[in-house]
Amino acid sequence: MLDRGVVKEFLGCQLEGLEIPEDISREALVEAFCQYTEDDYYEWLKDNFKSFFNHGNPDWDWVREKIRAGE
Image 1 (cartoon, rainbow, N blue to C red):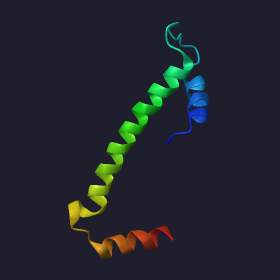
Image 2: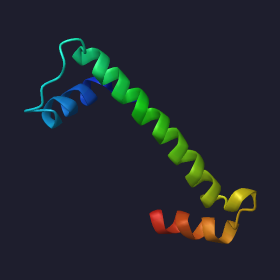
Image 3: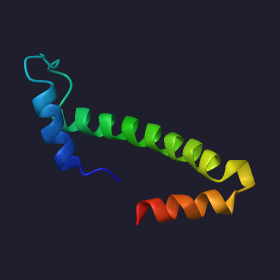
């Protein structure tokens, strides 16, 4: 889901000045960070889905207002 190249560049900037242990490759670090972020993102999406759709009882008037606000 995440663009590994973008994440690699981001981590390169953010980790500047930190020493990464020799037994951890940049590629492995990027992949582990992506997996961690994607797992968290999926949980965030599920929580927001529940809230947005009122736990299975959607308020369609409220949804229409959100749609109009975004136009």
